[in-house]
Length: 374
Figure 1 (cartoon, helix red, strand yellow):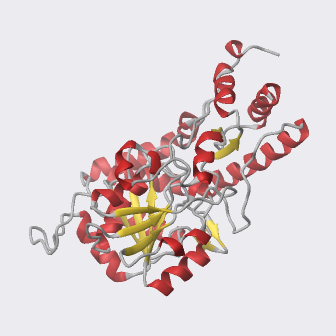
Figure 2: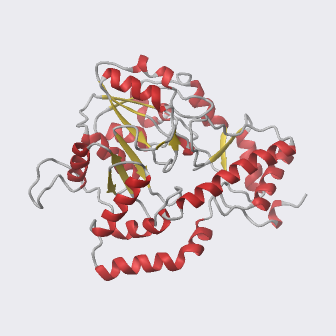
Figure 3: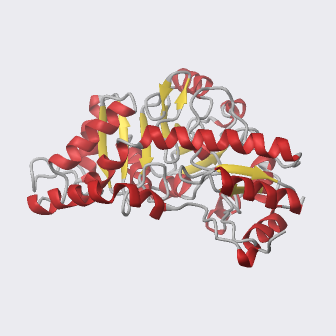
């Protein structure tokens, strides 16, 4: 077998390959904004908001400064108070729980379904107390959480549902798009996302006109009209340059999603043909999986990661330490063993390349490298 040092590196994500196909369109979009000299909010952002809302089967879209700020402003919109509890998952990016804590809220964790890596609805009801304000499911790796029982519990107990859809734009649950089922959906346009900008950006979607109005107020220091502040908000605005770039990319998103789905299916075929005994992501059957990540699993994950990197194959751990074991949340009193499915996932999972431009030859090399290691 050829040694890794003589092979072309395969990155975990190749944004340069994507940009090469869009260079002229993006340059024209940026020039349009520069010529207008309107860089904050404005018609470019408004158009993008309408397009993402329609794409996500929602009435309203409110562009904000990042996916983290989308979560933060959604919690501000329900007037989260210190000591209020939000039920969520410990196996997610830090911003999910961090946004709760920043407002003085109390994240309450429920373990994941080990098959989908999303919050297990069976554990939610036992976590509900008189202080619970909302449930925040995360649609991890591009597959939606099991929303029907979550919405049922929320309705019965009078709770909000805020979808953390940062990794799931265009994903579907029984025909309904991410961000359209809960009271609000929160999206990230971080460059590595399926729809990624040239910096930070985010959006909140909703079908509730009152929540939409409140989020628009909150993102601009609570002012309406200018300099007249009805509530205390923050500076959570999406800029026009990001919106212009993202509008170009949005027109290609379904094509890119189809390529990711094709790559995921090819991985399954290649691993099966090779007889490689490795844990593969499973489709829960709820609907459209957009494969923001393709996550494999092994009890010898760290050895496998070292092997792949030695052969110049990009890979990444999402996430090595579950939120309940993070040092900054030690005050919550959780311990090792509280959420075993999340802890096992943190120790065993590894994301490998699945980006649209990957190609069959590089996928075959990745699978061969893993099979050889096994």
